[in-house]
Amino acid sequence: MSERKATVLVVDDERAIQRFLRPSLEENGFAVLEASTGRAALELAVARKPDVILLDLSLPDMDGLDVLKRLREWSSAPVIVVSARGQESDKIAGLDRGADDYLTKPFGVEELLARIRVALRHAEGAARDPEPVYEHGDLKIDLTLRRVWLSKKEVRLSPLQYTLLAALVRDAGRVVSQKQLMKELWPEGGSTPEALRILVHQTRHRVEKEPVRPRHLKTEPAVGYRLEAPDE
Image 1 (cartoon, rainbow, N blue to C red):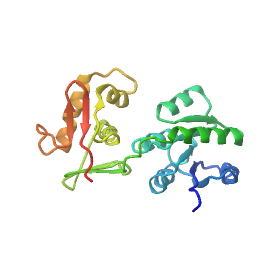
Image 2 (image 1 turned 90 degrees about the vertical axis):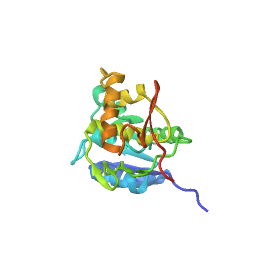
Image 3 (image 1 turned 180 degrees about the horizontal axis):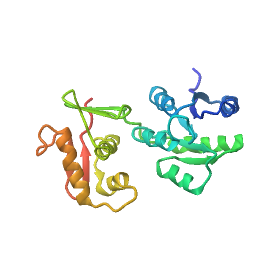
């Protein structure tokens, strides 16, 4: 039985880049997927779960940084930004959004291959991605559609409330510290545990039938918060 090839998803709307990368990657033992829009990239990432994603920032339908943010709501697959946008601010923004590496165009194939190998080594042994759909009792959260249901009725959440749930889904069953949540929810800083407590209180009133006796979103006093592990 042949060894499974690692899959690389190339997200770039420049046909010249795709024609350049596909043979180079295939010659070095990789299977290649291609997407020329952010939406197509997200759909392929859900359906095919690539091992590495090469992501351009300048896409025709959405900014690559927004694609990266969406990916990081549910996927830990290594993402290497490959972009002509080489300003320091772009690199910092990409890394802050969760990119594993940043390569500025133009680049050499050997350098790209080396960075892919490093990304794959770092990913080995990492925790398995959570399922894109979380279900616990009467609560359902779909991370790819960004939709939430309680007792089969869709729940409307603010962006911050949704981000809180998405962060907890990624570590469902485990406590997420207040510090970690505040960093993810308010990356620019300036927040407090009290602001987080209020946000959790508001979110419970959306996703719990009995907010004073929560079934899903639990508090670990003085530590953080936990979303119960999904149903088997």
